[in-house]
Length: 286
Image (cartoon, rainbow, N blue to C red; front, side, top):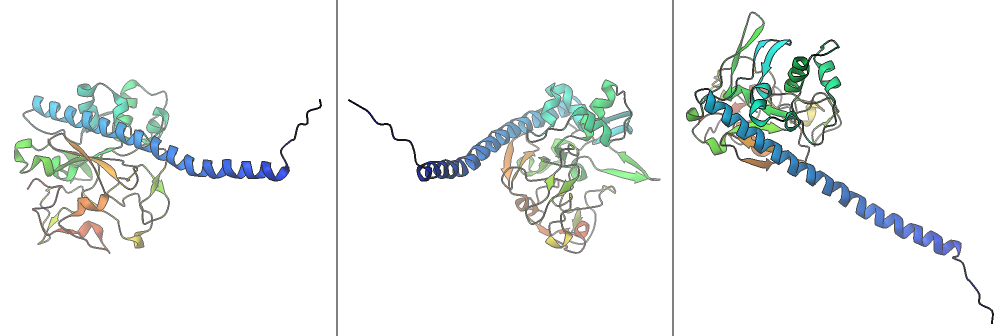
C-alpha cells in the first residue's frame, strides 16, 4: 500500500498567516492595556505609601505637611520627597511605573556635575519625582529679590475637608511632545516635584493661596498647543486619567478636568483663571 502526503497550498498558508495577523492585532492591544493596568495599580500603591509617609512626617513636625524645599539649590537642598523618603525608605516609589529614567538623566536635568555624590543623586531624584505636590495651597512660598523662599507646610487641621483636598498628583513630566487634545506625551526624563493648581485667584481676583511663586495654571485649551503645563505639569498616563492622593491619605484615579470643578477658566491667560465656587474646588483649604 502506498500513502500520499499533501502539503499546504500557497493560498492556505496565506489564509493561516492572515488569521494569525488578525489575532495578533486583536490581542496585542489587550496585552498592552493589561500591562498598563498593572502599572496603574503599582502607581496607586506608590501614591498610597507616599501619602502615608507624608502624614507620618506631619505627625513628627507639629502636624505640618512638608515644605516644598528648603536650602540652597542644588547642592544643599531638601525637596519634599527627600523629607518624606525616610518614612517610606524606597526611592523607587517616587518614580512612576511608566518611567524608565536613570539617575544619570535625573542628575543631568539639574546640571549637576559628575561624579555625583549620593546627596546629589537624592536631590535630583527629589526634583525629578513624578508625584507633583499641591504646593500653592499646602506649602506656599514667596519670591524675594529673585530668590524663591518656601515656608513650612500647612497644618492638616487647617484643611476643612481632608478627603476632598489634593495632596499631590501622579504623572508629572519633565519635557513633553505630542498633540492635543489628550495632553502631551512625556519624554523619559523624569518628572517634576510640584504641580500647579488650576487657579489660585478667588472670584474677585484676589490671590488667596498666598504664594507668589505661581506663574502658569492649566493650559488646557487646544490653542495653546502641546504644553507640558497642560494640566499644571501633570500628565494623564493611565488611559486619560491620573492618580490623585488626598490629604487624608486615600488615593483615587481621576480624569483631569474633574479637578477643575469650581473654576472659571481664562482661555487666553490660564494663570488668571478664578475660583468661583470654593465649595467644590479641591485644591484649597476651604
